[in-house]
Length: 81
Image 1 (cartoon, one colour):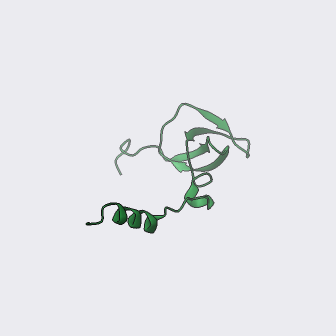
Image 2 (tube, rainbow, N blue to C red):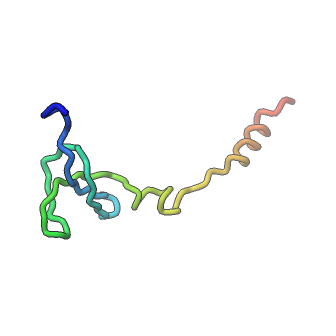
Image 3 (tube, rainbow, N blue to C red):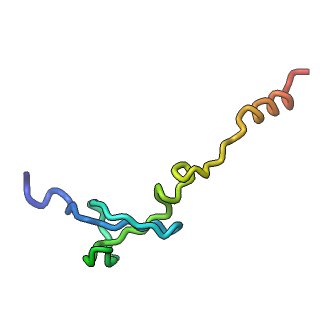
């Protein structure tokens, strides 16, 4: 491989701002913020608005739309007279 063509792949902490949940993974994303992790080392920090810990789909709090009711309401409203 050519030198200096690939981004730096390193451990990074992602912190979910809505649920105060954080996880350590590897990424090439650049950031100026750092955080001290559970193992005592300091890692770059990426703050995200939503993650699998707070997303309604993954937490089971997803709202199901009443698709059938909406279709029936539309048909009744615009039915041919």
